[in-house]
Length: 382
Ligand SMILES: Nc1ncnc2c1ncn2[C@@H]1O[C@H](COP(=O)(O)OP(=O)(O)O)[C@@H](O)[C@H]1O
Ligand SMILES: [Mg+2]
Image 1 (cartoon, protein in one colour):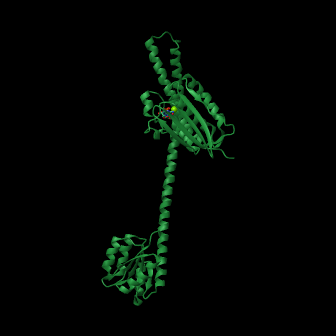
Image 2 (cartoon, rainbow, N blue to C red):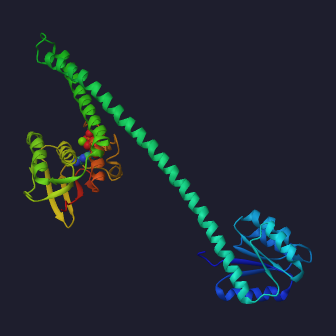
Image 3 (cartoon, rainbow, N blue to C red):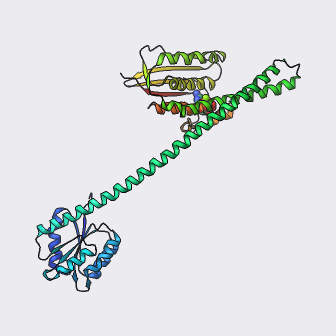
């Protein structure tokens, strides 16, 4: 029962009350007493007891009439009636009214203790089974909620995939028309026309970027969930990712410092997932670092973990924005202020993979100084 069990003795006989206290207190029970019907009723209405010892014959009322208020307060309170020689029928009546057991006067301390312990065990059992039923109900509700949210998620990613697919071809079609015009292949344009069309082109670029990110996000939510984790060679993926961003870095005169090779290093992931994580981090580092800056990639194995550290000397992230990086569509104030376009989806895609691989993402940043993203992933063990 955890804390001390609380017992109330309602009996007009002083000897019985004191006898009960003497018999029970040394066994760790907290015993309180009441000497009349009225006194007992007041105590019952004020407090909840684990067990009540109840004299059936009280000078100012029938003890049996206290059973109802006792059980109304807590249906699991155990009531044990104390009967005299001549009151066997009363004991039966009491049990019919919800008393758990009876004990006849005179009784020994030992008899009392046995009866009380039985009663308390019964109480514990019914409390436990109630708790079990509540837990079972809660579990069933959780399962229902989970199924609902799974269905909703499935619908969301299916919907996103469908919309993105449908959008991609008309948008890229429009973009190639615009580019054709920009190249002057549909006749000369005035400088003003080509300036406007140039802006259309930039908008279409952004739209395509958004569509691609949405597609990756939807894919990462559905398909990737099914793929089992495997041993992924870090070097292979790293090489691919660097190759794809070296050009952008070079264009901005960014000093891209690549990690030494780790020929045997493997992490527990999926190749596409690791590729997506590293690609997004490197893409951001290059994108959010002004020309002439530096981007550095470090890889370290520490025990069972591999740390990928991508540092830049870029625009940084304000402290209050850091906790939100990775939320869908979140973009920090600094990029809005600087007018750098993006979708705010890359990090949420990366974060999903990191979570799925049982990894961690840590961000350190100083506004205007630079940012370090650290991704920790479990190393592959045979
Ligand atoms: N290396 C970085 N330096 C500064 N800010 C960054 C960096 N990487 C990510 N961020 C911030 O996190 C936001 C979310 O990144 P991401 O999900 O990739 O979206 P975006 O399409 O805007 O790049 C970015 O908009 C930017 O505010
Ligand atoms: Mg990005």
